[in-house]
Length: 111
Length: 120
Image 1 (tube, rainbow over the protein chains, first blue to last red):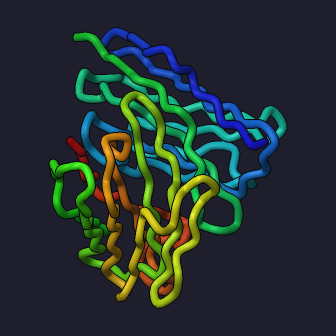
Image 2 (tube, rainbow over the protein chains, first blue to last red; image 1 turned 180 degrees about the horizontal axis):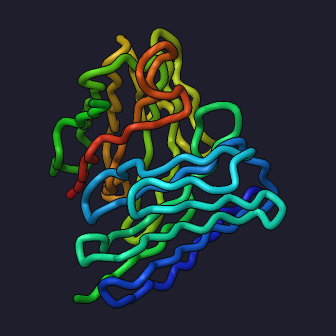
């Protein structure tokens, strides 16, 4: 069955450092991979979308890589700030627009 | 742009009653809307996919007679939890995919702020 794995343990880093979150998947050939941010008690907020034929995408301090051979995506936040503290979700979809979410990784950026 | 609203943001009801949750796309049209449920410290689980003007498609294990979905227009979908029980208490989130031809990609989904349902 399809499986999407994100590190369930919280990631604690110091302000100013680069945070790197991992999303691994099995039994899936997604056409798109998306990253979302979710704050407690709120809905997810779309951050970035990367297509299967793209290796890397950037948006301001965010960078996403997508390795379809390793079946892995890495999500980087450079120059992290306490305001970046949240849960980050990866989600995969095929040619349709139905998303399957990973379990999310909680990021804590300490001042 | 690309704002999705939900109403109410939270609701407390007695066991056995029905609760309706509205999901609206405010500045775009959405042929497809999705309903998710999220339990504490867990990820979003898709409940159903709703297409404007047709019956919703429910995921395995989701009772369609208990979770009634109506998608009567391109900007509004409703989820009604019928005969609610304490185990239905959860965070319900909707999302909407823009209809093709608009500013955003068909593959993008925009999420509402969620509705916290507590059944006593």
